Each structure stands twice: as structure tokens, then as C-alpha cells.
Image (tube, rainbow, N blue to C red):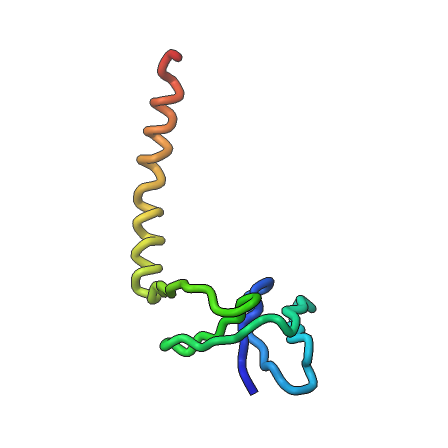
Length: 91
């Protein structure tokens, strides 16, 4: 059995012999038999129509996500002030 990630809803599911159309049980998206699965070094399985498509994976870890969220929170008032000042200028 192969585990696969749905391209429609992003949920993972198992591809078994009884699921010939590679249908996602979460959203019902049918991937079809012309999708080819491949596994990356990080264990993520993708399916691309008519074979493999070259691409890379860049995953942010939780620390980076938290730092980005805090940075957006800190910058938000300054962005709004800048927007307010530029909108008040004559055109």
C-alpha cells in the first residue's frame, strides 16, 4: 500500500488495490489511474498527472512559523501607519 496526499484537499490517504481510481475518501477527488506517485527524501508522497514533475519542498519548522507570526504582529501597526500617511498625501 502507498500513502498519498490529495492535491485537492491536502489530506493524506492510502492507495489500495480496491481504490483503482485513486479516489480521496475525504473530498472525493478522483486522481485517476494516469497519476504517477513518487516519494521524496522527507517521506512525502506526491502524485502528478502523466508522470513526475520536477519540484522541491521547502518546509518551515514551527520555530520559523512562530517567529514569522510575531514579526507580522509587530510590523502590522507600522504598515497601517505608513498606509494611512501615504493615502493622505495629495494625488
